[in-house]
Length: 199
Image (cartoon, rainbow, N blue to C red; front, side):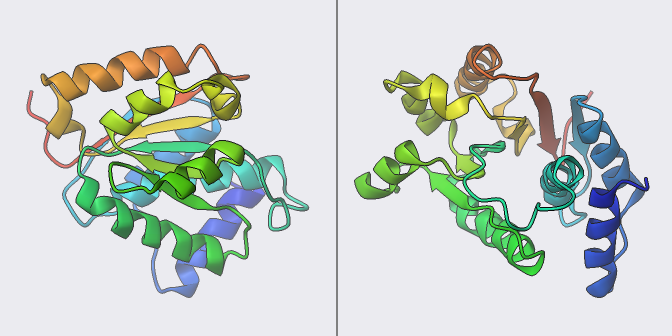
């Protein structure tokens, strides 16, 4: 893993006294290779980083000379979470990484608490990362002009997948994903994230 994205992320982790787990590195490699997958690991083991940092690595690899300067790149990562209460914490963790890497990516949140002005702002200029609930995702897909907002998308991550399996919300997400993958300019990687999935 000698590509610049891997090097930069591993240096960032080392600077914080951390080292990537093998499952994280495997996910990063798969993301860079355009593959889809499922991350299944206990709570607190860095599942969020396994996909989020993979999206950063992918972007850095594709823009090694100016990744830190590039602004308004369009939506790169759509993070679907059924737990609205966790959205802010996830967003803060992502923003911290982006800031420390000196990148210009923005993180947005879209759920029932998102005010009208923020939604309008997102519609005009999508952040690179959008954290969204299944219900808000369906509302987004019902809006006029949504194909243009999604055409730059590279990765869809569905967090807490075990919360959605076999439920109406899970079916909602599956339908939304099947719609989105036909709107993008390039193939989209699909990632499920879960701490507890039974056989």
